[in-house]
Image 1 (cartoon, rainbow, N blue to C red):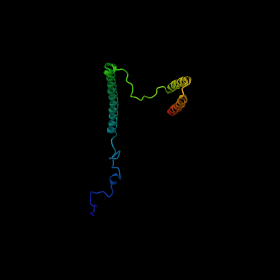
Image 2 (cartoon, rainbow, N blue to C red; image 1 turned 90 degrees about the vertical axis):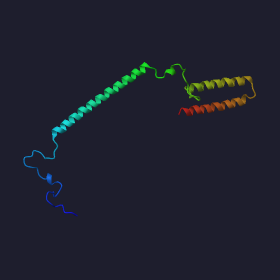
Image 3 (cartoon, rainbow, N blue to C red; image 1 turned 30 degrees about the vertical axis):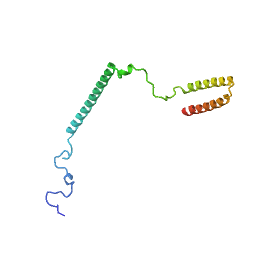
Image 4 (cartoon, rainbow, N blue to C red; image 1 turned 180 degrees about the vertical axis):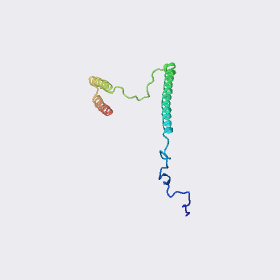
Length: 144
């Protein structure tokens, strides 16, 4: 290896910081406070201006969007169409009301069968009971 002990070299990297020169009020490696303070001041001013500028542009864009929405309809063809329903099968809007209607219709149907004295009334009654039980199970599991 080469010998670096010649003149002009320091014995350690911290030799120049070992002592403060005569007449120095601060270390020669310290940063000046004035330029740092000016930089921080102008950085703060730029940040405040940027925030106010962005807020102004944001408000301008919102106002412009509200004006354009008010001036023209969003879907001009939709005003002439009737209300479109979703495709079948549709969900029940009021399942309890529909269950009540279903049960009253079934009771009325069973009463007609019973009054007519049909021989198949017993079969219809058992089929109706199975339907009611399965429908009750579907409704009770749907509300969990």
